[in-house]
Image (cartoon, rainbow, N blue to C red; front, side):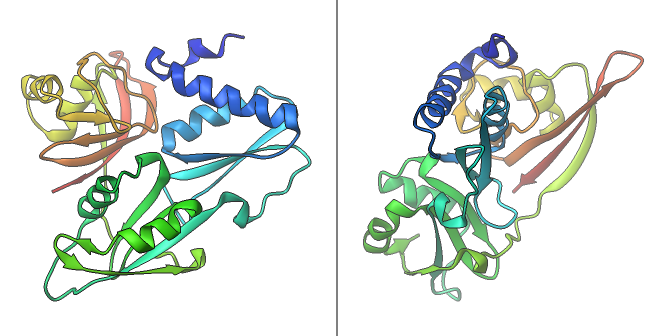
Amino acid sequence: MDIYQHFRKEEAPFIDTCIDKCLQAERNYAPVLTHFLDPRGQYILEVITGSYQDLKVYFEGGRDSERKRALITPDYYEPQIDDFELSLIDIDYPKKFVTIQHQHILGTLMSLGIEREQIGDILVGDRLQFVLTKQLESFIMFELTRIRNASIKLNSIPLEDMIQSKENWKVQTATVSAMRLDVVLKDMIRKSRGIAKALIEKKRVKVNHTIIEDVAFKLDEGDLLSIQGYGRAKVTEIGHRTKKDKLHITYETMFK
């Protein structure tokens, strides 16, 4: 079976990485840990791992997390939470004087040279928290001292103390003619297809953290969109076709 034919051509490098990690786990008969994966990446890895008879894959990123690390294991192995090497960081900051949001935390972390794949969920609620790979904990505790020009203090806390984010995703349903990026985006932002096309061509739309300029790019379940000037959206379900050959879809948005 050609595994590549089931996915997008743009996903081939990631598929190569997944296959390499599966072969490593199979060859060494030992667990292999990945970086953080978005829902689409988790789905792809799960499909690929399922093609290996003696391997299993487990995902962990904290309670109700979206981004998770994967542990590919031989079938004998029973993973423990520590195997995922996660660090939960709580941010203490002057709430009366500054408002810190998801994008401020992510932007500051990446300005320190940290790659997105090293960062898990960023949680915004009564407290601010983020998850990252354990190996970066000491670096973060030393280097991250300010966000939005406000002095902050970081505390490493147990993963079970992870809060639930108060970011409100709004569930939407729609009927679309195709899963083309411009077609679905038009419905998400409630604008014309021309405006959706312009956003894409001006490099203002990311799918799974990658800028997509092809208006005909085909979206799939689990895809996460970042739309400059609007916010984020994710495709959660692609349903059945109508009698007029249109698709029922469900997606969630978190717009400004």
